[in-house]
Image (cartoon, rainbow, N blue to C red):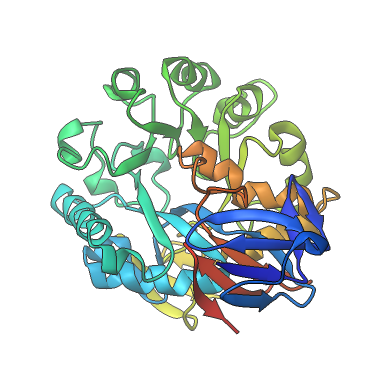
Length: 380
C-alpha cells in the first residue's frame, strides 16, 4: 500500500486538504489524515500540489517524433512514455486518412502493443483507437489526404472492431448515414470533417452519432440561417471535442462553449501530431509535410494540421480564459472523456476501485509527477 499526503486531493469535484490517498495498482481510499495510522510501503509527499485523476486524450496522433500511422509498436511506446510528462495516463491512438493498408498496419501495431503486457505498462495506457478518416468529406478534409477518402466500409477495420472506440465520419457522404445506423451500438460515431447541414447532422444523432470532432474545425459553421454541424453540437445532447490551444478556437469562445455544453459533454483534446514535444521545424502528418512555427502546425498551403498542444496546457488555457474555475475544468480532461469512451468504471476519477492514475500539478498546472496504474512514470 502506498500513500499520498499533504496534497490538495481532487474528490467529489472539489480539492480537499487534510486527506490521505491510499493506493496500489488501484485506488483504495481517500481518508482524513487524522484517521490514518501512518502505515504505508511508500509515502509520497505532494507538498501542497494539486492531486488529480490522470488525463485522458481521446484524439491524439503523435508525440515526441512518433506517430500512430508509423504502424510500429516502437512509436506507440515513445508516445505512451512521453505523454506522461503532460499528465496523460490514457489515450486513444488516433489514425489519419491514408491508404487502407496503412490504416490496418496502424491497427495491427496497436493490437500488438496492447496485448503485450510488458509494452502496455510502460507509460500511459492505450485504451483504444480513434479512427479519424477515411470516412469523411473531401471538401472538409483539412489536413487529411483527399485521395484516400472513401465511403464508410467495415472491411477497413475488420478484425480490429474491439479496438476501435471512436470513428470520425461525415454523415452526408453516401453510405455513411446507413453505416452509422448499422453500427451505432458498436462504435462512438463523431461527426467531423463534414459539410453536413444542421438537418443532416441532427439526423445522424438520431441514428446514433454521439459527438462532434474538434468543434468548429473542419465542419459547417454556425450561421443564423444555417446552423450547420456547430448548431447541432450545441443543440443536441452529444459530446464535443475541443482543441483548447487558443489557435484552433479563439479563447473568448471557451466560456460560451462551456455554458452550452457543460462539464458532462465537453472534452478537451490535443489533436497533437508527431512534432508535439519536439523543436519547431518540418514534420509529416498522414503523409503530408507540416511546418511547425510559432506554435502552429501548417501544411504547405497554410491549412492547420493538428497541434503541438499538451493536455495539461489545454486545461490551463481553458481555466485561464474562463470564469469557471479549475475544479470544474478538471472533468473535461478526466471523467467526461472516460465516460464518453466507456472506461469510467476504471478511469476518470480518484474513486476507490479505479486504476491508480494520478497526477501532481503545481499552481501553474505544470506536471510534477504522473502515476499510471500505481507506478510512477514521470516526475520532475
